[in-house]
Amino acid sequence: MRFLVTGGAGFIGSHFCDSALARGHEVAAYDDMSRGSELFIKDALTKEKFCLVRGDIRELSQLTEAFGQTQYDWVVHFAANADVRQGLERPRRDLDYNTTGTWNVLEAARLGGCKKILFSSTGSVYGEPKIFPTPEDAPFPEQTSLYGASKLAGEALISAYAHGYGFTGLVFRFVSILGPRYSHGHIFDFMRQLTQNPERLKVLGDGQQNKSYLHVDDLMNGLWQEIETATPGFQVRNIGHSESLTVRKSIDTIIGRLGLKPALEFSGGERGWIGDSPRILLDTQRLRSNGWAPKRTLEASVTDTVDYLRANPELLARS
Amino acid sequence: MRFLVTGGAGFIGSHFCDSALARGHEVAAYDDMSRGSELFIKDALTKEKFCLVRGDIRELSQLTEAFGQTQYDWVVHFAANADVRQGLERPRRDLDYNTTGTWNVLEAARLGGCKKILFSSTGSVYGEPKIFPTPEDAPFPEQTSLYGASKLAGEALISAYAHGYGFTGLVFRFVSILGPRYSHGHIFDFMRQLTQNPERLKVLGDGQQNKSYLHVDDLMNGLWQEIETATPGFQVRNIGHSESLTVRKSIDTIIGRLGLKPALEFSGGERGWIGDSPRILLDTQRLRSNGWAPKRTLEASVTDTVDYLRANPELLARS
Image (cartoon, rainbow over all chains, first blue to last red; front, side):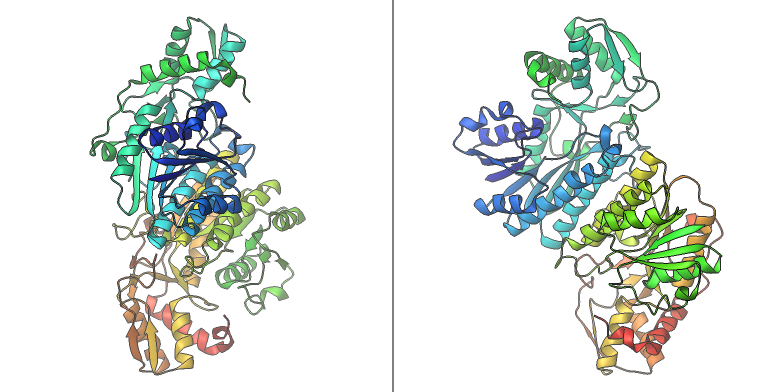
């Protein structure tokens, strides 16, 4: 099959490209290279069935041109603003990238005759849920961040395209993903701080935020399971580990692996920032009923991430 | 208090302006006059405490200028694309008006120091619900129309602004509203057809779509009840009658009132159009627990609407 992968040079997108190539598919990575990296697609670039298309999801014309090049079977849409914390300082950004950007991807796909889309949504769309683990059909949620709001809007557009134009819409609500090429999130922040000063670590919140994570290899297995069995219509799947970790526990794993003993400074409060959900644990029964289960523990996933960042210190220097 | 009312020259918005003026408030109607009408604000325009600001919600700069004129206490946001049926022919329109337009209103309000917003959302955000009457915390819905998706996104933005910037966000999910100045919807379509040919009436769907409606006077009472008791934070309220009407029954009321006996031609199918929800009945317990109850029956509301359109035939000639 032919895949166009937005954000295909980013952390998760590049893993998807690699896994698609390994399965014999043709892949075009569509990326503006603002967060993506040539490093992540180094192997892919050596493959005949891979190409990189430089483009911005905020530009419908660029997307339309990309979809005009080849008849794609699937668009796999990872490109997004994933910087959740700074939403309130730049309140238009989530809307532009994650909502209008998703509409641009859908519309360009439709105009190009591609009617299957996989979308990387987020457990953040549940706001601060009252049910744990949180199922896909949890009570109508209240959005607590511009990021969650913008991703919810992206999901809704995909659903409307599925109903209105016959798209196959496969929406995954991700927890935070870990593993090689990880380049954003609390482990990244902690590693960066510890590189600059191994004796002190500032932590947002009280350290008791308790969240599920998932290794990127386990994510890929889940995505492929659903792609390979997809039927027309709109489907939502939570994806995340059934374990969760407190921030405090994940610090212990990180500093244990690094052999450091920094003094910890907690900013305090239940949430790391406004819109942070203190607890994330998703019910993945839908995905599990089709056979999927994660193979890595969360501790092994954190360790793997630490090892990767240690081996690639130039990533920590990126802004 | 001072109110800025987007869509203030439209059907519902102009009623809101009148009711605010009657309560002694100052009101600016912000309207691009694309669907609004000078006819609807004829009385308001004679009042000293009223002004009309011509502007488009798609233009942030125009909104910012409007919010810069006066320190408003509330923005009441009715301006929207309400043409649900043609979403699939113009798939960008709902996004521009109802999602980005709502963001523009929120952001201009924030920049202008106005932190209370009332938003006219829709029962369409429930998609095709399985629970009737449908409560506000129904299971996470699946969007079946671009209109519903765009309004859900508008709600989500308001919720994120409430959590992130301390807004008071009051979201009402409306059923279809009836009464004087009604200028859009199935009664409008039927009256227009019968004006052109009193002997034949084409009906979208099988006529069994069963929906709740509400008279605009009852709507106003509900909105004011909640404005006058609003507390900071995000609140959602369904608003609609506990009765519902089939399209078939509403036709009987209309043709009975007009003294006509047209031949009926049903296009067939459970839905009038793609994305039409065959059944809408909202649980209004939240609103009722604060005292609100509709005073008009649905039959009286339909009759009142028919009488109004008969007395104002020029409205039926509008595109």
